[in-house]
Structures are given as structure tokens and as C-alpha cells.
Image (tube, rainbow, N blue to C red):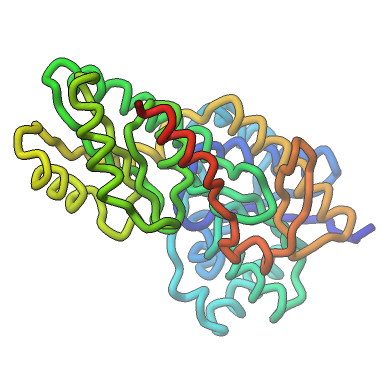
Length: 324
């Protein structure tokens, strides 16, 4: 058991629906375990600038249903320097804070790892990113909400696509990962999904589109933003092959990062938030709390951030089978 009496919580990197549920869980689990809890505004940048304040149960009331993060988030160039991290450490110690919970993704855990190595400071992480691209958890906080946002948008787009016999190329988020694209592709009945993990077979896609021409009044192609070509070029190639098609491009953008979190994300964030506090109390550090096969698991930061989450090729095969 540790001698931790005061903990801090921050959110860093891109916002994700469910972060507020995670903050709420950390604060209330901390209080339940007789700890004093502090919030840090604007992530690591706020840590460097001393934006640290006490939190209580009331300060996280009525936030579980809200998207974004009440603690705000920001990129921090200062925290990338040893001088900035030293200032952050001094600010934590000035409040007598003994440990920290950080909610974020790859960059967040990279910064946390360096901080632990340099100052021997206990930190546990929660996976908060819509991309679902961290090893050590089946799902990250925000992923389920993001794909449901995509599904709702594509369902609406399909209505107009069918009304006008159009082909819609829809670009979704996923700079390094195609997980949003592939799951939303299956659930919206897309004809094809293009992801950064695999080379695109344009001949196969064009044959599929040509085959479906007489059988369908709408066609949906989903492209992850990190795909080698991107939505714009994919649209142009379809126009070149099928000049008679009415091809439209829709880039969903940041609407995927906002909105009220789904039940799954609220429960996931709540479970992981409680687990993070209990892990600190038990003396753990340098690990990300995740959920694997419905069980809480802990993965060292340096293993979680390797982006070694392998895309399930069977999901692409399912899309091809069901696109007939």
C-alpha cells in the first residue's frame, strides 16, 4: 500500500466523449478512499503553468452526460522540455500532491512516462481517444460514441444518396488507425472501406461499384483520413472511372469528437476511473488501466503507446461479402 494522500487529475491531447465521466469517477473514487483531489486545467500546459485547484464531489456533479472535458485540454510544448517538466513537478509538490491520473492517448502517456522516469512520480493513465489505437484495452474512452456519431451521419447521408442515385465518399477520423472507418463501414452497409493499415485495391473497388450499379440506388464509400489517398482523391478516381456517377465527398471532421457519450463510454470511463484511483492507492504506477474481455487490466505506458493494435482483416472481408 502507498502513503498517497493527495492526487491530481488532468485530460490531455484530443478531447473524447466520456472524459468527463472519467474525471467524475477519479474525483469521487478519490474522496471515497479518503484522498484530497485536485484538478489541472489545460492538461500538461496547465501543469507547467500551475493551473491546479481543489475538487470535491459537487464539482463533478451533472457532468457524466457532457461531451468534451470540463478540465479543458491543450498541447504543451513546454512540457516536452526538461525545464517544463521540472516546473510541473514543482507545482505538484507545492500543493503536496503525491500522485496523478492522466486521461488521454499516445502523447499523454509518452509525457507521463518521461515524468515518472525523471521524478519518480506515481501516475496511472486512462485511455481517452476516439481512435481506439492503444494496446492494452479492447476499447478506449470515446471510441463508441465516435462510431455512433459516424453511423448517425452516414444514415442521414444515405437518405439523400438514395433520393438522387448518388455515390458518397465519406471521410472519417483516423490519422493512424482505420478502426473508426471499418466498424462504421460494417454498421452502415458501406460498399467499401479504405484504411491506412492496408494498400487499396482500386480495381476491386471499381469492379464492386460497377457490379452494384444496377442493384442499388446509393453507394457509400468510407475513407479513414489517414488513408494514403484521402477522400478527395478517392472521389476523383471514382469520377474518372464512372463519369456518369454523381459523386459527392463529405468530410465529417470534428463532429466525431463531440456529443454526449454513449452508455458504453460512460460505464467504461467510470470503471477505469475507479480502477485508476485504487491502483494508485495499491502502489501501482506507470500503467494504463484498460478493459480486456470485460476485466480490468493494467498495461505499462511504454507498451500501450506502441500503436501495435492489429486491425482485424476479417472485418474487411465481411464488408466485401455484405456489399453485394
